[in-house]
Length: 369
Image 1 (spheres, one colour):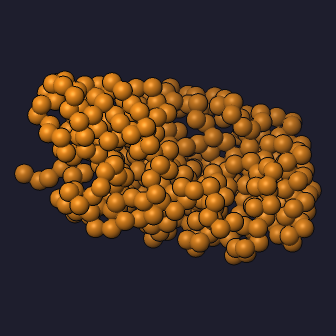
Image 2 (spheres, one colour; image 1 turned 90 degrees about the horizontal axis):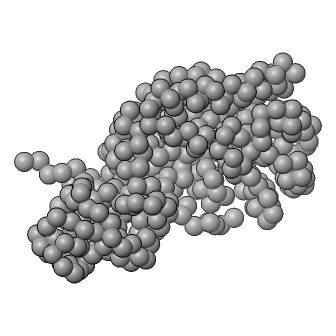
Image 3 (tube, one colour; image 1 turned 90 degrees about the vertical axis):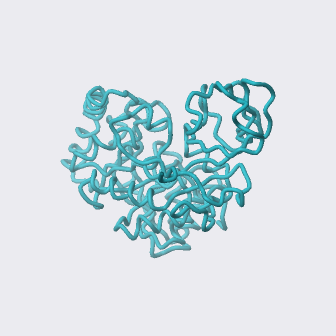
């Protein structure tokens, strides 16, 4: 019988808890992502999910040239990975304005852009970039229902875009929208939400073009709405989670078919009684940003969470006595993106064995800039 895809033949050599990644499955996810988008031209994958140079390299070998990120550390990692087009999709304020300008100045061969939704912050960014004799694109960040950052696609957005076009140090980069509020499991409802919530975005884009502005791209969505935006030739898609995939998205969006390409290796550290197991998968190993079970235990699919602390996860199972202390367990995180950031390195699995280690290079807030 063939061994399960996730199991490591040499697992006893790996200290737990450990993050394990599977490059062959990542490559398959990259192929599926490109196929869904009809090519690489409209892809700008987000690196926040993995934060690893090696995963960037896998995408580059597949022909992907543009990337999106959320932190200056991630942007620097991309620049050092020879990425030529990097979008930092996070508002630059305070000292980060100066850091961003140093980043742009340090990597003159990279086409950088960022987002803005505030005139004061935009002017500060433009001034610092101009003083550094540098330039970056700025996309107007729009809110279509998430109510996080961004402004509504109305006259205020046009005024901000006009200001970007006028200020030295910045150039019009287009429009940016993240639609994390669209979470319908039914793909038909998801599509209806996208069509409704984005109607004003496309009207705004057409009005900017009518007024003579350059709108290089409209960067939209994450992974749940990716299949919908992929069918719109005017959209630049920025999925991220699909590269590693997690239990949360797999269970919520069964119509989106990607492979789990990362998991956690843990162990039974205690067996308090006949119905419970205590594992070393505390919330310093797996993100706690979910109310229920935060890691789906592949070989214990019916496990119910009891207690989750910093270093411990206690679960109730039907036959705890069948699992000796020291038994290895493998789990798929409910949310892989913040889970990855908890680990300094990832064990690399090839053909059922741990063969290497990849640094989670951009997990820190600062690399050198």
